[in-house]
Structure formats: C-alpha cells, structure tokens
Length: 358
Image 1: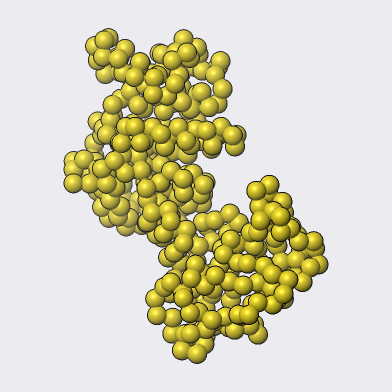
Image 2 (image 1 turned 90 degrees about the vertical axis):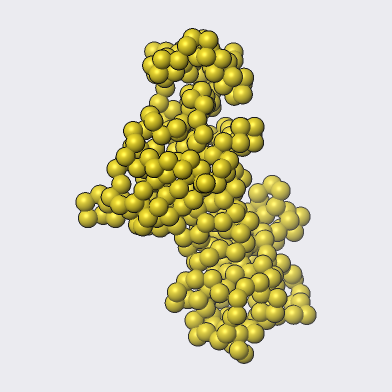
C-alpha cells in the first residue's frame, strides 16, 4: 500500500488544462519533491492532494483510502504554506494549539503535542511571543509546528522557504531534512529551487506543463536526465548543449569540425542521427593550454567568475558559448586560448527531434 497515490488525475480551469492524466505513487515515509518552473502545475497538484481543489478527472488515495471527495480536515494531512498563515493576535502557543482545541482534544493531549513540536523544532523559548515579534525563519518553524501537532501521516509543503533569505533557507532546509529523518513521515514538498530538491528529496518529480517529465532519485535526475527540458532545468549553471550529429555508426559525435569519440557513453544504442545534441555539465569538462592527446575543442576565454571555492569560466567555441567549472587556482584571463576535453562517460546525448535522451 502506497502512502499517497494519484491515479489518472486531470484538472482543467475552463479551457486550460493544468494537470494532464497524472499518475504518482509515494511510498511510506518517502520525501518526494515536486520541482518545476512557475505554472508547471506543482502547487496545483499539492492543493489537489490537500483537497483544496476539485479534480476534473481521476482519484487520490491516502494510506489506501480514497479521499477524492473527502474534506481537507479529514484527509490525515498537515500542510505548510509559503505565507506562514499564522494568526497574528495569538501567541505561538495559541497558533500551535488552536486547531487541536477546535477538534476537541483534551487539554493534556494538546499540551503534550505542543510541547513535543516545540522541542523538535527548538521553538520552546518562543511559545509566549506573537508572530509579529518573530523573524521569518522563526515564523516558518511555527508554521511547520502547526502541521506537526496534528500528528498526521502525510505532510505537504508548498514552497515553505521561498520568502526567506539565502542563509535562513539553507538553515531551515537542514532542519526540514532532520525533521523527516526523525519522524519518518511521508512528505510531499513543492519548490522551484533545484538545490532544495536535490538536497531534500528521496525522489524528484520534475514537472512541465502539467506532466511529470521524469521521476527518479536526485543522482539519476542530475546525471541521466530523461530529456532536454530536465537536463536544462537541473543544474546551476545548466548543462552545456552542443548541436551536431552522430557519425560512424554512432561511435562518434561531430560538432562543427570536431570529432568527439563516444566510447564510454553511458546510455543506449546511439546509431547514426543527422541531428543530435550532446549535453555536458560544466564540471565534466577539463581545460588545458596545450591540446590533449585525445579529441578536444578549441575555445577562447571570455569571463572568469570567482565563486570562492571554484570558478566558472565562460568560453566561446566559435559562436557557441560553453561554461566550465574549474578550481579557483586555475583561473584564466580573458582572451586565453585553451582546449576543452569532455568526460563522455558522464555526458548525455539527446535526439534533437524528440528531445529524448539516447
């Protein structure tokens, strides 16, 4: 039995199709991230799971129970919103306990759950403050605590860190991962931030246009993207794409006048294609001043961005711009002529017509 199951779900707003025949199974205790650009349908799917939107077609099951027509309060879920949604006139203790009191739980049970949530989220000293006296990170902890006290099996997070600055996002990301490790509850998390997705998820569902493009663990998503969209969306900076064709029965890739040997490519049968795209991440390209013994691509350095731990070097290969990640000690001045060697074992090859990974 899956913790959450989405079966053939579609959602239309008038003539606009937002979710298209979607299927998704979330395992017990799994942390799954719905990732994609604005308008891809990820928050819409989360709201469908929560019961805040009515489906056009399909069904939703939580813990084996069909909840398609069940009220949100009866679905056994706890939801954390982007906007915190705290009651400003209540203290933190009041915000945490309000829903439990409305549900008619005994005072002792309410106090126990509030104390447990405060201890897990380290907000005990804040219980008597009101939201206006809290920082953004503290407010989000309280919002998570309000879901936590419900003692549910499934937690839904709708971009909970997007309103915070970079340092707080990093800190709370660790706290959310620690929370999942401690509770082992099922968590469905929506974000457009790929760093959050890669660091938090057991599996990532990359979405575009109301359709899941790829569902896999973070390493697979990053190293073996299923299509051009996933390859370009994941990674910062994104994957470099070289347009060309496969030749010699699929044993090599031709980019301009350069022949690149495909021996060691970790994919399917390549075959010859008159239009193909070779994708290589910045960290899988090496730079040298002298031409290496194997095939290489001549390039000229345009910009060198110092990131502290390493550098991003932007180069021109003819009219094509390529980004390479290098150690900060290997910084290169603009105008330097270099040679680029690709790690084919870690590259991705796509059919230019279907945009699918080969």
